[in-house]
Amino acid sequence: MRTWVLPAEIDTDQLAPGHAMKHGGLEVVARHCLEAVRPGFARGVRTGDVVVAGANFGIGSSREQAAGVLVHLGVAAVIAPSFSGLYFRNAFNVGLLLLTCPRAGEIADGAALSFDARAGRITLADGRALATEPIPGFLLDRIEAGGLLPELKKRFSSSRPENP
Image (cartoon, rainbow, N blue to C red):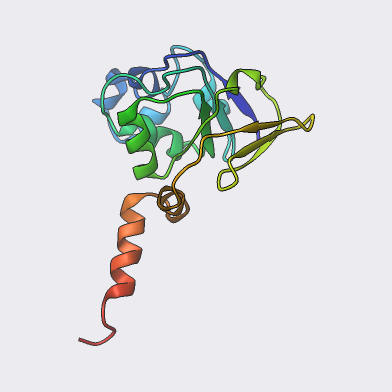
C-alpha cells in the first residue's frame, strides 16, 4: 500500500476531468484522474493504495464519477481533514471509504500505514496513531458491500421468498 499526498481543495474536475467525461465511461475518465495536480497518478496507483489530502477534498460539482474513478483505480480510502458534503455522500454510495482525520497533514507521501475504520484509527509505520472521526455503522456496512447498489441488491435478494 502506498500513500499519495495531495493538496487541499481537490475538486471534482481534477478527479474526473470534464474533457474525459465526454469520451466514455469510468475506464476512460480514470486515465485522466488527478492529471492536473499529480501527473502519473492514474498510471501509478495500485489496488489498496490510499489518497491523503488537505481540507475540502471533493469540492465542486456533484458528479458521482469523481468518487467512482478512485474506486475504479483500486484506492482503498481517502484520508483528509474534511470533505465536501456531496462528495462524502457520493463516495460512500459508490463504495469509497473516506476517513476524516484532522491530523492527515502528518502523513508523508509514500508512507506505509494501516487503518481500522471501525475503530477510528490510522497507524503509521513509526507506530504513531491518528484518530479519525467516527463513521456510522450503516455506512461502513455499505463500504463492505461495495456501495449502495450492491448493498440494496443483497438486501432485496435475501428478503425475497425462495419460491413464491
